[in-house]
Amino acid sequence: MGLACARESDIVILKGLLGLGAIWCAFCARLFGRVVISTNQTLPVRWERKRRWWIRLSKRLLLRMCRYHIYQSPASFQVLTEVYGCAPERLIPAPYEGGASFFRKILREARRDRDARNDLGFHSAVVFLYAGNLHSFKGVADIVRAAALLRGDASFLCVFAGPEEPASKEGATIEHFLRLARSSGVEHRVRFLGPVAPEKLAEIYCAADAVLLPTHKDCFPKVLVEAGLAGKPLVTTSACGSAGLIVQDGVNGFVIEPGDIGQLAQAMAKLFDPELRARMGARSIEIVNQYCRMDLEVQGYLEAIARGAEYLGIRESA
Image (tube, rainbow, N blue to C red; front, side, top):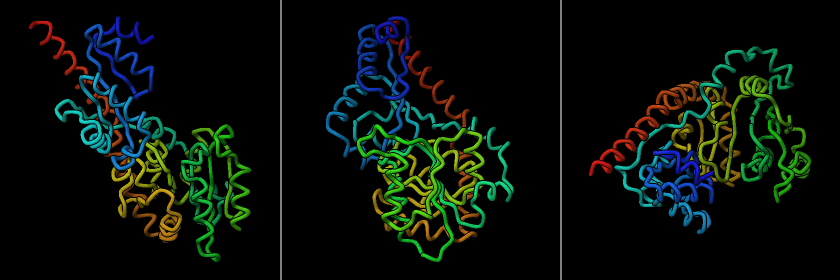
């Protein structure tokens, strides 16, 4: 497929750096004299440098075969220039839209009344929501452990919406996390909903009070875009590529260190304040609407294609 793609195209855009397949496609494209453009979402610099050496080596090899590089977050720009030595003049911004256009439509139809909270069983509790696959590296266990550090007299609930990952080496199943909750004394504080449809998830976002993603590694998770559109305060970690952009510490949420249970508990405790939640939630909407726009992403891709076409024209006439 990589060979056919290279043979039949003048410009090859790699949408995500997908291992050996991407390297093969880029190699074939270079053999045929095509322009190769990479698309990049990355971990922040500190965490990109901690990735396995062979991942960084293969990524460096791939990036060197690319003429231009689309970057979709400030973290990606920093990683491309500081970690992989890409020339800044060959970098083109195309901010990641993150499915915002799709999810805005779903949110318009979502229930937002008090009855919706009651129907979900949330009632007057402060609801901290985690949405996504129950991968251990996403910090699911961290939320359970942090719940055990919160005030015993506080009325709160940690809700997890998303499918299990039984094939993972950690055995990331609902029963696994329930055992952890029981041993931590917070079984009554957690609720696992399993996989839910987008329409149901939108209703849950609206009914929740804050959204947590204490991930140990993530590039640009859509959950933060969706939760931001729903007007929720956001908590994530410095190992998330959208930290500092979609989640701005002290502005629309908190950015903590991955695996720091104490910091996570402190952030959750601060969000018991309804005025703080309202203020941060309003800023989340503004931030996502400002950055996650289809027109900006499309404009970036068109600019990259135009740059590639210009390069081909200059080279062929030389």
